[in-house]
Image (cartoon, rainbow, N blue to C red; front, side):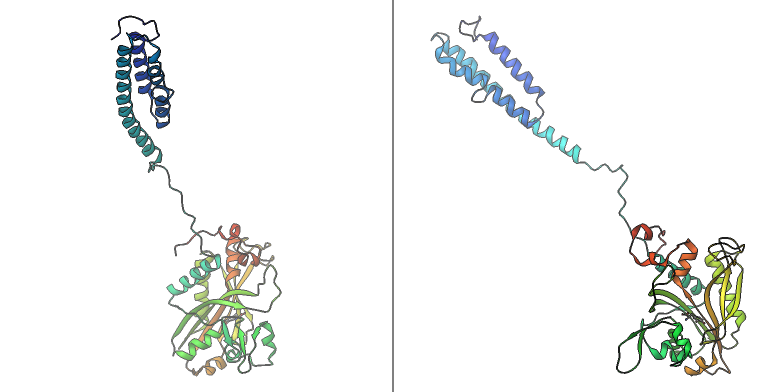
Length: 357
Ligand code: DAH
């Protein structure tokens, strides 16, 4: 070791200081970047140790070996310390990365956006569910239908003025008349043709009409048909069934009303109304001031319709009903315009709560 400050700027004290400083700084290094800087500062080509070793040549020959040894020893010390620190820094950086990338399982998760069922689908399920619990089977039928089922068998002969009530979209055909069904009633015929009484079915489905679209008319919409045929079926059964249905859907306190109406496939025909749930019968904008809201058409199945499917009208009686699904949703949720249903606007559609699928 050198004993006293050398004349040539390298004393043992100075080398000790240099060692202290370098080792101290190395202790502070926690990243590879800082480590590289440290290495450049002391051991790099322009580093302090390297510079000093290069300067050895200008030292007087008598001190040169001693200083050289001291510097080489320092260099070795620093290189060993550097290697050791490098190992620590690698561990520190790994630990920091693991911490940064760790999943915080206590954070509330992000909910995936789950869609809602279309309000019309929800209503179809709600209504068919009510009827299913009343003993009705749910069946579906074709949207493209023969004129025979859509009209003739339902007691609406060709040229009959009642045929104009259903503004029908026709499919071009050389043979039998084919239409997009304007109502779900054709399924009454299809069901009865295929089975014997007792029959109790509800039929949800899409319908089409050649219609100018406005707030209450769409050229396609949904209906739910109902049909019950058996021995001794009466209008009282119809009224009781529909009242129960209306009360399950619109509230137990609903009052119900039958009034005469005409549909070719029923006799007598009725329209079925409930007291307005917005004003409770007082009269308001929704019920047009009448206090009543008509929700469906119904009646006793016409004997001719029973005959058309081979049922004996002397033995069997029955009733049928048909309702518009969009209208039910509009009434239940106060939707002012039927066109909202088919514009695919999520601001509208996502307002309908999700019912369990
Ligand atoms: N099919 C009729 C319509 O589209 C609704 C209807 C009325 C159906 C009376 C019926 C019924 O089953 O008995 O307007």
